[in-house]
Structures are given as structure tokens and as C-alpha cells.
Length: 69
Image 1 (cartoon, rainbow, N blue to C red):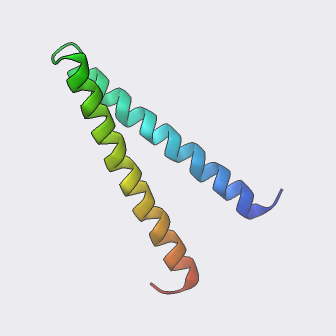
Image 2: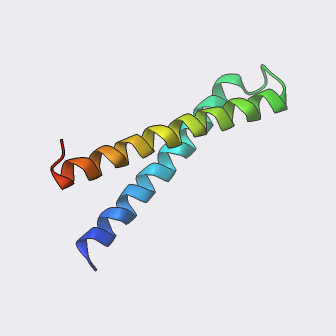
Image 3: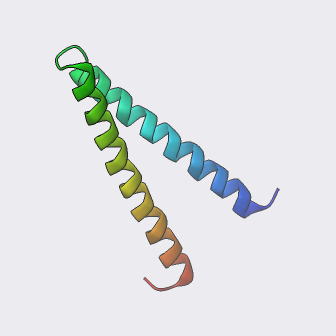
């Protein structure tokens, strides 16, 4: 398998597991303390922040590989 494909698969697994852990951590912290709707909003907000952070890391890696940074 191509090395680039392997690296993309590894990054995808890490990104998805990170999002799962972030959402589970929010569930464990606020689950039962707030309403279900509020918990869902907090989980969605956390996942959006996580996706943005992962996107910025991907952008940084591509810039470094191109030699821009």
C-alpha cells in the first residue's frame, strides 16, 4: 500500500478517535447535570471546535511539507 494512503488512514483513525473521546468526556462531565438538549449542544460545540483544531493541524502539516513554514 502506498505510504501516503497509510498515513491518511492513520490520521483519520486518530482524528475520529479524538472526536469520540472529546464528546465522551463532555458526556461524562455534564451528563445528568444538565438537560439532554444542553448536553447535545455542548457535545456538538466540542466536536466543532475539535474539527477546526484538527483542520488547522492538517493545514500546518501540508504547509510544512510544501516547505512554506
